[in-house]
Image: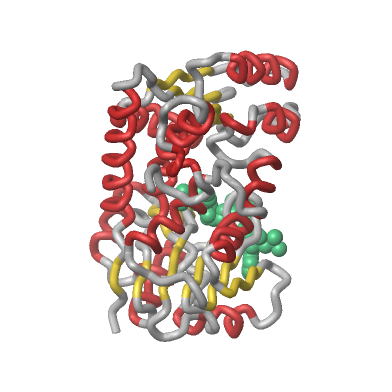
Length: 321
Ligand code: NDP
């Protein structure tokens, strides 16, 4: 069997087009959703992510602005900045790019973000809304996982879902969304016994671990849907060979760059699974698309008293009913 490849790039493009249409519709009422991104210091990876978020905002017509306090910014500086963004009417979404410098109290800063503008969905208020199935903002990567399942026609109700990873930003919210979608959910982590055996129960297996190619063929039931959230840089030859030996395209890229991006799922799983997300080009592109969707959703929810269609403001992902 060769698994169906679930094309995240294509789905992300569809979502961006839907967001752009929603933005256009709002423009007719004189409203333009606005996103503020806060990037502290000079973390090269964060700079790349933030550039992508700002560019994507421009593409779909969302107003965006970037705030770049220096590495030396204090917790109080950031609290003041967030408070100012909370107050500003034209800002619908606030995203504080993580990680923050170690001297900053990141939890305190994130807690200060107005839950109605918390487009990352990390605020405890939104976490509570998610777990009690109330309207709120859902973290982008988990929301992207659900969009992939939905847009690929993979049923969730009644299915056995296994999530490997229990982080606050990926594993737990993915598990909650699957549960809300009526799957029977098992959450695994580094202390789980017989991990492969538990994973083999899954009709839907989500890997959010951060270990390149850890999920091998023997973790996967024949025909299962496998969603690979992992993004790992492979930089050593033995690791490369374990994952990609004989893959010409990867070999060329690895030789040229000295590294290649790998998921948590071993490529051999493609011969066992029924459907699988690639890395790159799977969950990754959905994350930014869902940030755009969340910004529109936040703009609509904050203007709930006006004429906007609130059907899009349920705790479902996506931008429209
Ligand atoms: P964390 O490091 O916060 O969490 C990893 C989880 O995996 C933990 O719950 C940990 O268990 C579990 N784990 C680690 N080792 C094992 C093991 N040997 N067996 C079973 N479970 C294990 O990572 P994140 O959740 O932030 O990210 C996970 C992956 O997803 C990373 O590769 C990250 O780069 C990627 N990612 C991708 C995004 C995208 O847009 N595609 C967005 C965000 C993340 P325990 O709790 O016991 O320590």
